[in-house]
Length: 150
Image (cartoon, rainbow, N blue to C red; front, side, top):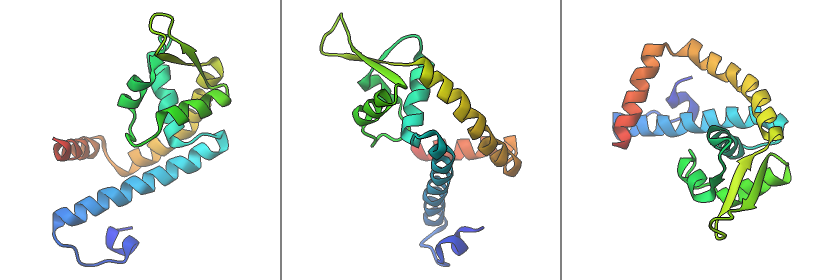
């Protein structure tokens, strides 16, 4: 569906204004789809992001600041997210023996197993998107989005 129908608005200040609204609307739409896919697994998109970050550094453990710097949603409370994942036995927290002011965070075997299951489910979402966008269109979209952030 086109943006005008989705938000019931036909006039925009400019094509750039419409593009920004389209990006925001689409971001929320994708976030909603992702939240629905993750709900049966008992994790949020932000928790999923933390688990993927931890898996990427495994077997090395990470400090909270490094996790935060790699997160997609920079407004997320990484401390709270890690605590929730720890309560679910999906990650570990331990004092850094070399620097006792730091806490080292690592993914558990249970966290790795959950990621494997989740990613089977998430793969379908990427297949659906791939049927709507060609690889060339996706490359162009990536270039345009990155151009906005320069």
